[in-house]
Length: 433
Image 1 (cartoon, one colour):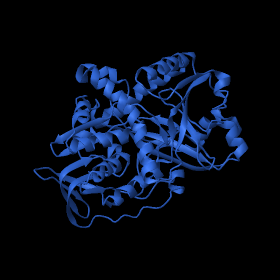
Image 2 (image 1 turned 90 degrees about the vertical axis):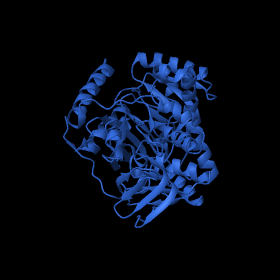
Image 3 (image 1 turned 180 degrees about the horizontal axis):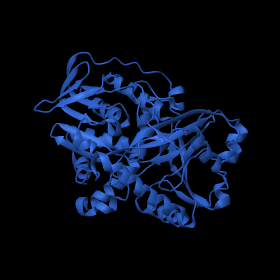
């Protein structure tokens, strides 16, 4: 067992490998005036930056407000894994959105990755983008699931092949004795997420978007022309988009009740020599396993092992974070026993009760996006696009997604975390069987 603590935070970036390897340090001004625009977006992560960028590309006057730094939250702390798909099992909602709605969600899951590819190419964003992915099996039943998954990807028209790998075949991509086999594809990939997001912020600037950092929103006044109030100024706008996700806090109680900030952690080793790095992940792919509290890992551009996991519903991290994560890493790669750990960090992911992204409107002129449940690098980009579509006269996909109902977590503020922790313990026990 290990003790827990709240992740250590400040208004600057956490001590992550991503912050240490950022292409540049953002230094946008704090909002100190009362301004006006067409759309004000709250939240400087992937959802907010890309919604603002989509709108600015279409000629709207956009202001983006971030409480800390661009990419400060989950966007700049995650595993950097680009995974297609949108939420978990859209077929559950066929009665609400119809068979065409389900097909649309699957197609958006493919489009989400394409948006990242297009963004990087169009704006020449340097973010270590690489394609290649392996899901890895710990149990025989995982291999059966992978076979079904491979066949399913064909049925939804995914142009990239998914290849089932046996134990020895997998070692051509992920060289660990821990796994029985895996599922390889080139549709998914990995990226330096903070560099992607700040590159997208630069793209927003190129379209005359205005960005303010260190500008925490403290109130929202709704009305015919809503006003967003920060600690130092305000913005009135025709439309407001709330994209703070797990870090929006209690600004809007209705949204806060439908999202649970869950903690996930990552470590980054020192740079490995090329021979060792290539022997661990010969395919230079991103990797994850199918457990509830999964491991996910990959190599960085400078050959560090980035190893993440330890997801839990407490919102807390281990006090001995580095030691706990090292133990998990060494269970997969014993060769890394003596390797130095240069960075260890945690952050919140926004969990929704039904594991589907939450889109909707508090009013005709106040829109929200949240709850990617640990699967947000690609889905944020498509959610931003369909939100921009909604605000510029093409609401079909947004309106379809907003038909999916999202219940508040049971138990209120006091009991929802313990109840979910018990639920996670159950699924962890089931994973171990």
